[in-house]
Image (cartoon, rainbow, N blue to C red; front, side):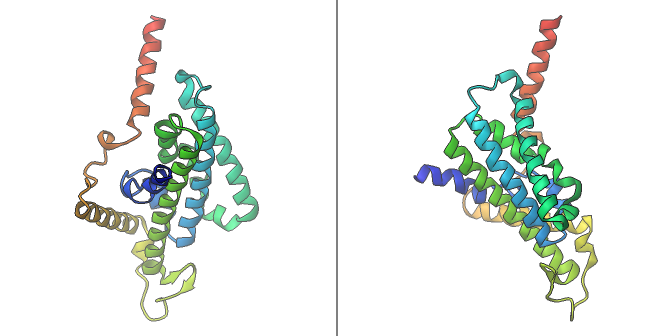
Length: 231
């Protein structure tokens, strides 16, 4: 029980995909101009994470190693298509706000990384809990970023006026520089908390610290082996 709880809580704090692993930064910066956008993007990604982790875990002993990445992407794309159609049908305003970033969940590195690093190596229940924890952690950060940017940039929160009537909104928070600023401040706060807790802070943003770098490395190795065999 405690072990399963650990799989779930990892994504919330210890290995938060946005603040600790620094994954999925493109949608994080792009869609968080409002809190409701962050919730919409986060829930959509969470549904895809849980469903893809479940399917990949069930099929982990069937999918051949050489085609696992294309197979993972195909499975993820199927669930993204279902989520996108549901959002279009029932939440058109969210679909319009998220735009191209909703179908781009297919190539979201958080989802592919969890498929490669966890779901393909673990049973169903831990994989589902891992996806759920990562998804909730991702949703929480997106919602927090959206709330901060909306509050300072528009003076509203979930479209309800808060400070707009007596303080002029700072529009820069709704622009890309504001997104980078808020994201940087949240990462800095996360690092400060990590240091106080005796954990290692985020120090590098390149491939060396990317938890999904094994996907690229294994793909390159496979390509080199196939080229050598053809020769």
